[in-house]
Image (cartoon, rainbow, N blue to C red; front, side, top):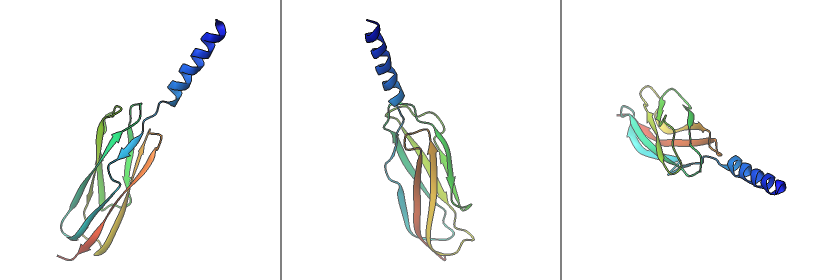
Amino acid sequence: MKKLLTLAAVALFSLAASAQAVIKFDKTTHNFGTFPEAQVQKVDFTFTNTGDKTLIIQQVFTSCGCTASEYTKTEIKPGEKGTVTVTFNGKGQSTGSVKKVITVRSNASNSIVRLYIEGNMVKK
């Protein structure tokens, strides 16, 4: 009987230890196409917690000062959705091809996810 209880406790602990949040984005790249330098570009990247533990976004950072981000700061329960909103302001930047990286850090099993925005910025 003691062995059976020990085995059950180990099995329960193993199940609890394997519970994890998983962040799954609908898309990880967005192309703005061709746009004038004076026009601010904005996109929402939607994600779902496909895991079985609460997801917490710990940090979102961008590759340059011309790109800003906002994100869901509340806990995202399994099956719930959240958003990372990325804004690109090309004013004062060189025109031409644009590709920026946004890094999302969370408590998920895939704890680092990179999002990309791109496009072709032209003079007004």
